[in-house]
Image (tube, rainbow, N blue to C red; front, side, top):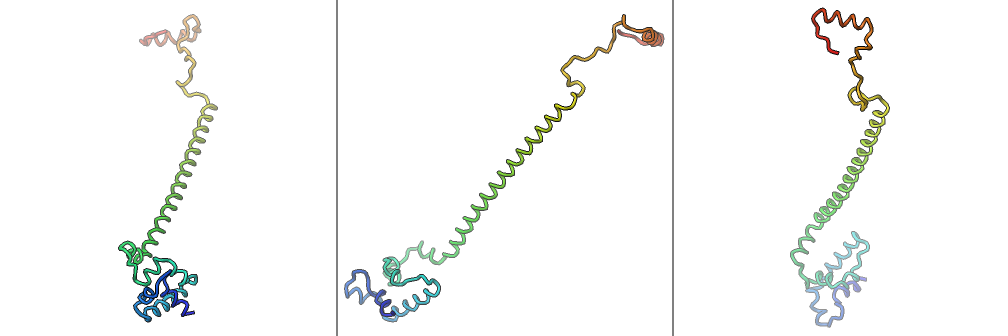
Length: 169
């Protein structure tokens, strides 16, 4: 099996024998890559070196033919931080949406409660008599006609006038 994986590392897709001899600097590098691949299989059981070597980028990086650019190097070195930031951003978005939903529900509930209280107050006002000064009907005249005064009323008015009070009818 090791021979098969060794072939995978040294056998490029449609490569000549000259290219095969220059693919890896030495057999020790090849053995080191195979050992590393076995260790990687323990962490990632789905890892298949033969399948990965079909990918030109993977193969080129293993052989040292492809040199990653600054962005790729940064992303490889800080993959955990980048993933953490992406997860935090996603969580913040979800939490933000949940808070927004909760606030909108609270506002809707408050509006409904306020409408109910207003309707109750309007109904309650319709069931009680109007307060003084709010009645649309004309007020009652406080001064009776002189022809309708009783003898007792006339005597009261005469006593008040004898004390010096000005009487207006």
